[in-house]
Image (cartoon, rainbow, N blue to C red):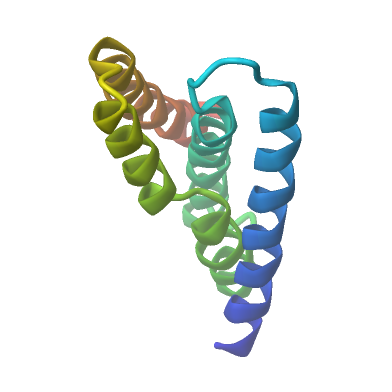
Length: 118
């Protein structure tokens, strides 16, 4: 269990650093950092789970990387907060675009990750 927490810490720090890097170059109010992090993380989670189910990786790697790192790297809470901020700022179209596109692309990315090697 401790290793999941350690990997989760690395995932959270990675998300924070990458999100800040993207935000530094993003001149719009669209939350590209969280958007791309969640899509990439969803695909990696699908791939990692695929490798676990096919017994390419061990349960320890699945728990450490899949549950720990990727669980903290991807973030539903930040996504929700950013969507609410767009609504509060009366950027309704952007908010709906963000919510719908994030949901569709994250699910599609996870599906592709699960099936990329089949």
